[in-house]
Figure 1 (cartoon, rainbow, N blue to C red):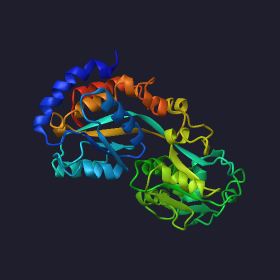
Figure 2 (figure 1 turned 45 degrees about the vertical axis):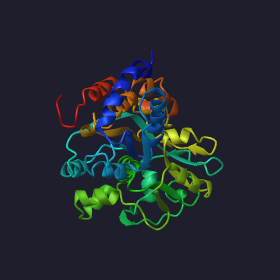
Figure 3 (figure 1 turned 180 degrees about the horizontal axis):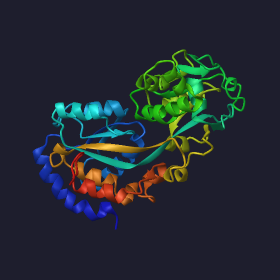
Length: 346
């Protein structure tokens, strides 16, 4: 018997009693554009199978969602923030200052960041982090010196890449994907090329050098995309040499328009992400405001449904859409059921 059918009758009673206590009877979610499609799938199924209204799910980016989440407690604030990165300590502090002190962190699974281009465009078939750093870093190592990035073509620093103009469309700074891109691609590439060591040898502090490693050139070769992946796809459609950063699921749903590159010789796929072989992957999360549980009808039930085997398991609809199921999903289910908050031992 499915999770939904087993619990629907009991939830109807809970919904009736909870609605009395709250003027708002609809769960509100905002945040990561990467998590958006998964949350939308769950919300639709929840509305169809449970005696609660379908949750409202909005995008806007991980940082924007967490900012809204941390505005305070009450029916005029959102209940859940989706994020394609872990919440930062400064965000936890901002939450606490606004009265959001009990936060439940929920890891829903894993996703990979892929580099994809026009299906009929140049063949960017293989990348190393060093290639992306040389193409997009604000300052790079050339002939033993750190200089402003002089490269216009991929072939200028790697003859095995196309002699095509560098045109990259990367997530803007409000997206959780950007942080993963910086840490697992630019920072790694900076070290691989020797630029990090050269920066430190030139007198920069280690912290300043690390910041310089993830700084992106601003001469038009790299363009920040503040919207979702559909905007990046539109830019690729309009630029035959363009390459964009996408989530694995989005790419897999657009293979008729895009072709993907390997990273460090590994093709991004559910299997290579689950095994940890593909180097540019990340966990996906949502954060629950515990103070809203029992006040906003269906909030806990929605969260439990989201991470149920029926939805987030390896044979569920989220996996079919591209989510890599979490091997520790059972522990997550228990943590949600027990309303375990961040920093608590029980």
